[in-house]
Length: 230
Ligand SMILES: NC(=O)c1ccc[n+]([C@@H]2O[C@H](COP(=O)([O-])OP(=O)(O)OC[C@H]3O[C@@H](n4cnc5c(N)ncnc54)[C@H](OP(=O)(O)O)[C@@H]3O)[C@@H](O)[C@H]2O)c1
Image 1: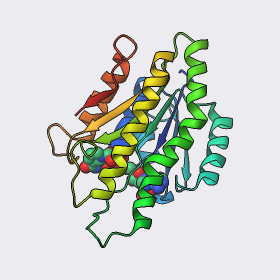
Image 2: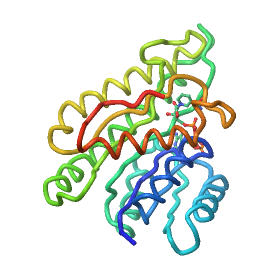
Image 3: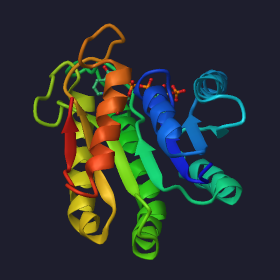
Image 4: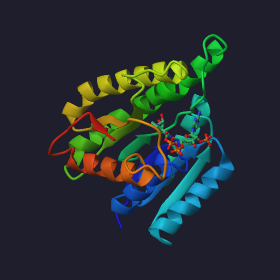
């Protein structure tokens, strides 16, 4: 068993679970799951262990709000001490909260900005230099920062204007990171999920999204591309 680690920020029963499970089955024996709800994290841990098989995956969970940087960094210190730093960072956290003009509060806009942009910046600050180092020091490594995005950066929905604008800012940040660090051997890009996700949707179901994400990640070293559109 390899000793590689994937860090999942925003672990839930949808895309978070499907990507964590597929990536664990392909390459990662250590999985770190972060989300706010401790109970749901236990469900996610069990689902992952059941899917991969007993003793074949090590899972650590941390219940915290990503917008609280101190809590986040403390948990990451513990995760890194336990498993070593990750080879893949998968940033998947978001909330879908309707935002009507002009009832929506500025605090709610700022909270979404913190989830999608500020916390992603904190995570990038911590791990991108490490991923660059990994790319340089180990030719067999496949270091990556993968962020779940959507059609909202290009096609805002006024009833979701807050999420639309922070997703646009997030994509912009990831693009800048990719322009800077993909030439240094780190695969950085977005999964562009172009509509609502549902287990019953033939295209945008979590299982297919994970498969397409894996194909894109796996192909990145021969043919790097910023996004996979699903
Ligand atoms: N679902 C869709 O229809 C859809 C469509 C297009 C794009 N996307 C994108 O896909 C990603 C999410 O995938 P998903 O919808 O399938 O969800 P998911 O993987 O089931 O779960 C994502 C998890 O993120 C966690 N999270 C949210 N805010 C957080 C915070 N402040 N701190 C820590 N964890 C937080 C939530 O858990 P807690 O509540 O326990 O914190 C949530 O369960 C997002 O980037 C979203 O924009 C989703």
